[in-house]
Image 1 (cartoon, rainbow, N blue to C red):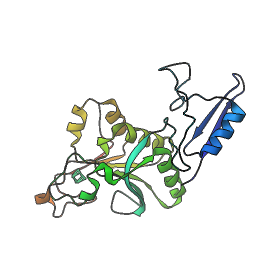
Image 2: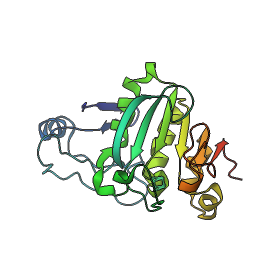
Image 3: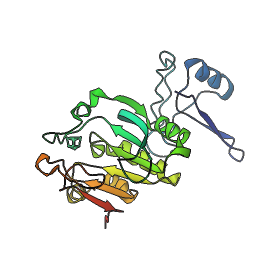
Image 4: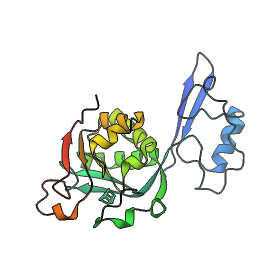
Length: 227
Ligand code: SF4
């Protein structure tokens, strides 16, 4: 796991914004000493707007377990690279933990419980994807069920799109079911998805399912229409 600290300095206002994915209590103490008492701004929200800023707790726990309170976490089952079966080309794969759908005969029952995953910061996932970027053609998000974590996955796909990375998403929901939820976070994910594989796994339809799919009822939908 890499520590990363980014400083954004605003000479006009004299403000400094410090973004960190992981930082030890020592580093945070030093920052406090140099920069003064901090306030959290939660995803770079201006400190003067929204809900009142929260002070960063001074007791930040043991080294390596610091949680900033201003980052988003995904229940991650595993992150792997060089897959050629989860979408076009060679892909990095974000496999989330937790699935409320529970298709009979699912190939990955070990991913059904969120507790089987590890709560992992989105920025940490992005850092590992970027470290392997030269060797992949895009990122696939599958599960578990990605749309059971809409806020965290929306942040992940937003950051991936900012980096111009091709995105494939697998879901056990049909596209219609997702749209009927009328959830902006879900719509945002769909808008940024280059290829959606939708629908539950149905064992009876498992033979000759076709490229990237587990059963023939599932559909490959390029750039799903959310209008
Ligand atoms: S949606 Fe996917 S992970 Fe969930 S039970 Fe169905 S096949 Fe398994």
